[in-house]
Length: 164
Length: 164
Image (cartoon, rainbow over all chains, first blue to last red; front, side, top):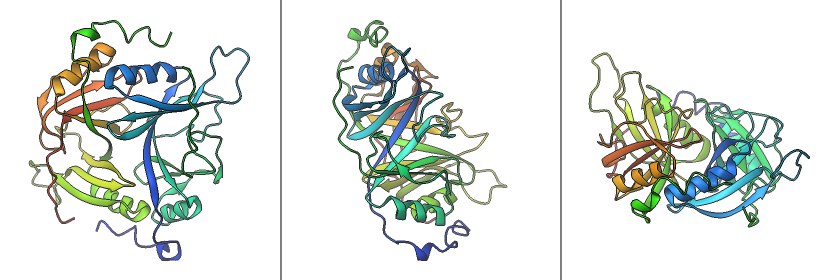
């Protein structure tokens, strides 16, 4: 019974093999606390920051630029930490899955989104050009049948190292 | 300013270097849909199941045993999928972070929990003996200042391969 829904919907029509190069949990933090959160994960778990990208647009009243994505290395994996503000244009906004978004990197975003949708996920918005949130190039967003949001994106640009 | 809280609290008194061997996002799914969710992640993303552990206690009226933890390989990372029922005794219950819990494996659970707490996390409950949710041995739970729940546990027992 577990396969009742996943084998219909024309899965055969899209690429069978979409290769993913990384999956990275992205923790969304109420702006502007992402910088503090990065410090916390360093202190609490020994995470190491590999780099961060900042929001290119900042309001005049903001003291510090918001973090689009900070990349942390922890136990051989990568975790992303991002500021999310009400006016954020980040694709992760309104994630709906309680603050954690799962970023899946692939060289074929369109095929990956199509395959996920054919398996039962719901596309949220169009595939767009990313704004550098450790997602270079194209970014698609899907919500799976269990409420989790996946960002499907081109492999990350190298995050710039920025002094905190 | 980002370090205002993380350097007090006696962090010096606990082990400075706690080594973590893995971090695994655990996706909590309303029981008994975890089996369907595993099928979905296989179909949508090409995930491969490395094994699963089942709840040892089942109600007579349950048709299928609930999944304590299914371990999926995806893009070189590991993701866990778990049934969560109202009567579940799983440590992940009442996660409070929207369904995603971050499992951190270490050989020194007590020191890791102490260090996280000294950095500002809040321990939730005592450190207990795990029930096999891909967490062998001891399991501690902490909530970080940003609302995310981390399960700190001994390295996983090998999950038994079970026919779905």
